[in-house]
Image (cartoon, rainbow, N blue to C red):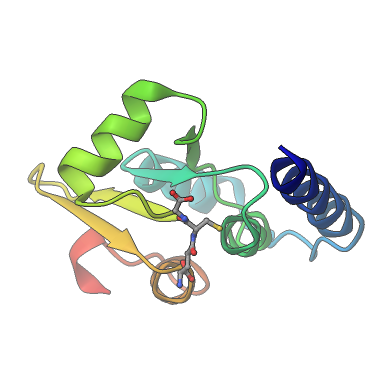
Length: 131
Ligand SMILES: N[C@@H](CCC(=O)N[C@@H](CS)C(=O)NCC(=O)O)C(=O)O
């Protein structure tokens, strides 16, 4: 009970620091942003709100100006079950990547996810299979 309170409290503090220190959003021409928005429809981030590794990943998403759907695997039982059964384990953040052929990859580890997003979206747009 006390532990949960401390953990939630710390989570809120980290969320507040994140909001106060967010990096500047990358800007793209409208047409390029539309292509990026189309590409990110195939990405879903399974995450917890107060998890520091998820906050780190959400900062990268914010900085790269990506519209990636966030799926709350702490409070949504369907997302939690999907993460465990299809991803393989309950660990967040996890990025579900669906390529143009419909095959799915579950990417764990915040550093791997950040690297993938940077490679694919920081410069010229890369297709799903290229990074
Ligand atoms: N090395 C991992 C660590 C991720 C991690 O420890 N996530 C915690 C939440 S902060 C987790 O998923 N714990 C499983 C659970 O709470 O059930 C990363 O960088 O993504």
